[in-house]
Length: 104
Image 1 (cartoon, helix red, strand yellow):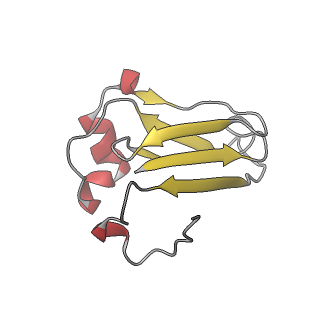
Image 2 (cartoon, rainbow, N blue to C red):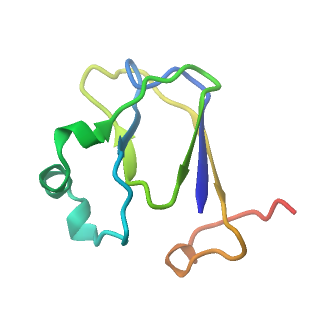
């Protein structure tokens, strides 16, 4: 899976952005492993990246990249973004309950 995430507003400073772990994962993490304390204990501080993005900026990343919304108390504006997910042939079983629109 490849995700294209496009921000329609500035984000990462005044509005929530994204936070990435820059190390590729070789397996899906269990829900208990996705709790902030667990994620912070598993990865070093240098492996976290929170980009600041301008309207129209796009990020492309593979399904093995751990990411989430990054928000702090100083971020008081709203964020609008568009997320597109691309699959090579079929939707993975773990996403079967999500709603998708075929583009071809």
